[in-house]
Image (cartoon, rainbow, N blue to C red; front, side, top):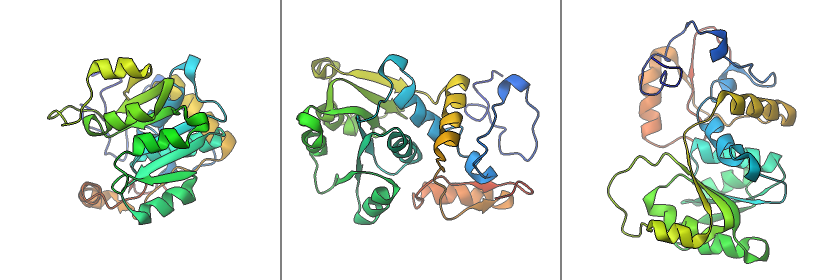
Length: 246
């Protein structure tokens, strides 16, 4: 077993106690509760990698970030982008979630059901109508066409969670991506160095990871997974271990 497989391809993290080498641990941000800290190792780290993983093109103040939906990566990306002084354009499918995205910090929210050409709309809303600097692409083949329309020349589309499946009707070809003149990065969580940098930023900016209002006990772990599959959550679904605190 390698250090990169535990909790992914290899089970074993749903446990109250575990033994790890010192090299496999990082210091938690001092401003977070145990519940909040438990959310950091996947979605927030992935969002951090998407925005800061390519050091020569790392997010800067005044840039524009386009996020998709209300999954954990997109929500964390909004928080990191706002802390950096960036503008956030977010997409969602409901008025209720739009209000929550605005409360989280999104500057503009586009309902993609009402506006199927949301990529063009996002580009039009960007400074000089040049396009957005970052797209947090979590929709896969079905949304890539609009992402390519939204991104600016030499901007970044960070592709997250693209697991394959049937070809989408409007899936763009590789030539379309070349024509957009952008950088397309496949994101697979992040490194230990990136996590340390993220934790320092969380502490310095007092960023609080978004946890769903409903949490679950260790004994009710199955219910937590069922709740997540129903896509009712807004924020991370957390299983609290006995004695870990809130």
